[in-house]
Image 1 (cartoon, helix red, strand yellow):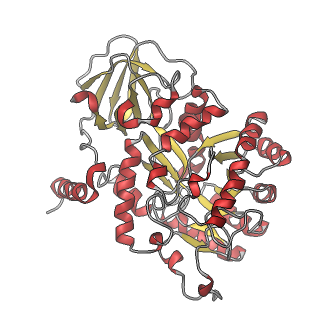
Image 2 (cartoon, rainbow, N blue to C red):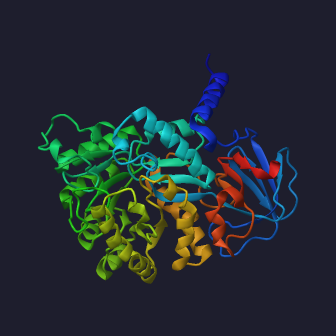
Amino acid sequence: MSGPKARAGLAVLLAVLLGSAWPAPAQQDSSVLFRNVRIFDGKSGALSAASNVLVRNSKIEKISTVNITADAQAIDGGGRVLMPGLIDAHWHAMLVRPTPAAALGDVGYNNLLAANEATATLMRGFTTVRDMGGPSFGLKRAIDEDLVAGPRIYPSGAIITITSGHGDFRQLSDLPRTIGGMLSRMELTGGSMVADSPDEVRVRAREQLMQGASQVKLTAGGGVASPFSPLDVSTFTEPELRAAVEAADNWGTYVATHAYTPVAIQRSIAAGVRCIEHGHLMDEASAKLIAEKGIWLSTQPFLDVAAASALGPAEQDKMRQVVAGTDRVYALAKKYRIKTAFGTDVLFSKALADRQGSMLAALTRWYTPAEALAMATSANAELLSLSGPRNPYPGKLGVVEEGALADLLLVDGNPLDNIALVEDPAKNFVVIMKGGKVYKNSLAH
C-alpha cells in the first residue's frame, strides 16, 4: 500500500506509539477564515482593531477590518488575540527528553522520544525551533512529511567541537583519539563531532551541510554540560573557526558559536561568525564589538540552576556562574542595542521543557511584554533568515501580515497586557496553526 492511505495509516500508528501528547489530526482544508480577532503582528506594541484574517494554501492571504467572504473553514475569534507562532532560537530537539547517557543509547527509541517532545513543543505554541546541535535531520523530515506533528526545524546537525571542548561527551577511556581512526559513539549518533584542525573542521562542517544543515554550530569556548570543559577555556583557534565560516559561506549560510567569555566571543567575530550563542560572561568591549559588527546575540534568560538539574555538582556550579551573568548580558544587549534573539537551550529535562513559555515570560525582567513577544517572533525570524538559500522554509515567519506563512496562535486573553498567558498554553492557546493547518482548536468543542 502506498500514497495517502499509507501515510494516514502510518500517522495513526505513530499516534498510538507516541501517546497522549499527539494532538487532533491537523485539518486539511486549504482555507481558514479567522473572524473578529485583534492582531499582535509580531512587531507593534499595540493590537489591531477587530479584524478578519483569511489563510489559504499555507499563507495569510488577506487581512481586513471589514468582512471577508470566502469558501473557508470559519473560526470565530470572539475578540481574542491572533499572534504569530512562537520561535525558539536555541533548541535541541533530540536532547530535551533523554538523560546524557541515554542520548548515546538506542537511536530508535531516542527518535520516538524526540517525536513525542516535538509534538509537545508545537502544543506549547512554538511553531518553529532553531536546532543548535543534535541528529535532528530525520525528525525534521518526519515533521515536514506530516508523519509527526511538530515545529519547523532549522537544523545545525552535529555540534562541532574539539577534543575536551564543550560537546565532547567522551570518557577518558576513549582516549587517545586516533586521527582518522574509529569514530566514538557520540560521533556515530550524530550528536557531536570532534575536529582538531582547520581541515577536520572543514570536513565536519561540510558533512552537516550535506545532510541539510541550515547553519553550522561550533563551540568556541567551555560549557556547562560537558564534563571536561571548564567555562573559562577558549577552544577553536581562529584558523579553525574560519575554516567553518568559509565552508558555510560557500553554501550561502552562516556559523553560530557557543561562546560565553570575551576571548571566545571576540575570536569568533574575528573569524567571521555571525551569531553568538549565550554570551553570559561577556564584557563591555565584547558587547561594543558585537553591536559594531552587527552580530546576532542568541541568549537565554537563565535565572536558576534548573537547566543543569540533571547534571552533576561540577556542572551545576558552572551553571551558577552563567546565571550570575544573565542580568549583565541583557543589560549590555539593551545598552548597545544588540540584535538579540530568544531561546531556551533546554537539555535533558521534560519538566524544564514544559516551562518553555515561562522562560519567555521571564524576559519581562528586562523588556516589556511586547518587546519580549517581538523577540520570540519577528526578531527570531530575522535571525533565521541568515540561512539564505539554505533556509528550509522559504517565506516570511514571525509576523501576521499578508503573504506571511500562516503559523498562528489564537490566545484567550491579551498577552501584551498579561504575558503570563504563554505560561499555560494548554489553557490559553485555543487555536494553534502551522503552515495553514490547524493542530489545535479548543473552540470547536
